Amino acid sequence: MLRDGELDAVIVGNDVPDDPSLRTVFPDPEASAEAFWGRHHLVPVNHMVTIRRDLTERHPDLVAELMRMFQDGKAIASSPNAGPGAGPSDGRDPLLIGRTALEPAVGLALRYAAEQGLLPRQLSPDEVWA
Image 1 (tube, rainbow, N blue to C red):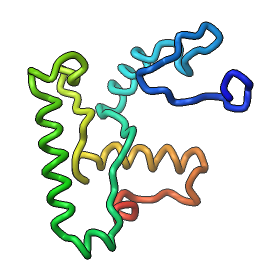
Image 2 (image 1 turned 90 degrees about the vertical axis):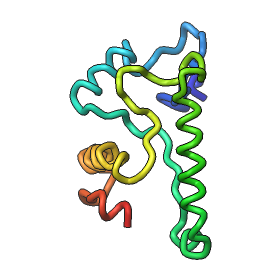
Image 3 (image 1 turned 135 degrees about the vertical axis):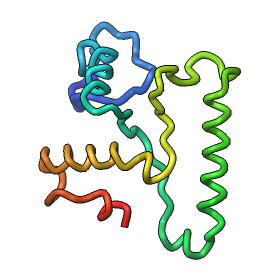
């Protein structure tokens, strides 16, 4: 669809196709990431796991168990034995867990969404978490 012009851009993660007819949105993605870090001192949220309120009310242990599993997974992924790509060693944490850790990134995303007209009005992080 991208090659046929049906899409202007796609998100491919780390698996950028080796195709000379395609190019990245940012000419130098690494420099763009560094500039973003320099301005905001946060790693943007790429994916987020959420749980419906009715599930948390019916199964209160679910949230605690999921948090435990994500914390365990993060500890394994961050361990020195995790191998290449285990995460940056410069203090940046791409594996944010919990509201407090996510609040700066969510707040910035809300600001950008409002500025771009994607929201009917500026929402606060408290409104989103509610």
